[in-house]
Length: 199
View 1 (cartoon, rainbow, N blue to C red):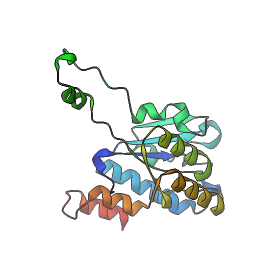
View 2 (cartoon, rainbow, N blue to C red):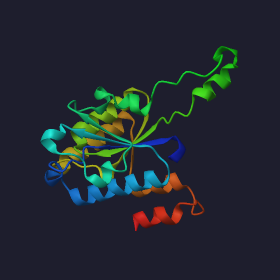
View 3 (cartoon, rainbow, N blue to C red):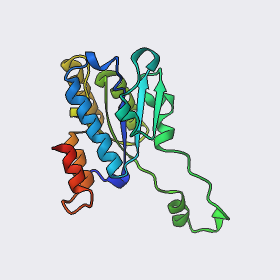
View 4 (tube, helix red, strand yellow):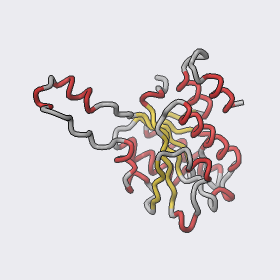
C-alpha cells in the first residue's frame, strides 16, 4: 500500500523553539519537517500544526507555521483531545436541496472528499506524537509516522515510541518515502520542484 497525496493530510507536532535545543538530532529533524511541509504545499496536501503549551515552549518556527492551514495550541499531550480530529475529519456539510431525493451513492459523493490518511511527524516522539498518533488510530485514521522527522530528548525514548507505534498499526516511513509516494512518477508536474526539496 502506497501513500496517495489526494487522500493524505500532514500533521506536524510541536517543533517549538524552546523545545528543539533539547531534542536529539534536532537540526536534521527540523529540516525534514520543513521538507515535508514544503512538499505538502507543493502537492496540495492539507497541513496542520500543533504547539504544546506555547506560552512556555514557544511557537513552531515561522517557516513551518506559514505553511500550515492552522496551528492548534494545546495543553493535552494528545492533540486529538483538543480537537485535531475535527480539523482532520470535519462534520459533513449539509447537502443543498432535497438530499433525500438523491440515490444513496450520490449522497455520499456530495458529502465526500474525506482524507483518511494522516502523515504525522513531530516532537517529543514518545509523548505528544505518540499519544496523538494512537488516538488517531483509535479514531480509525490510517497513520503514517515519518521517522526521520521525529525525535525526543533521548534516542531511546524516540525508538521506544517507534516500536510502540508500529505495534499499534502505524506505518513507519521516511521523508523521502512520503514525497516520492505522493509524486508516484517522474512525470508528475511537480517532480522537479519536489526533487529539489530532497537534494
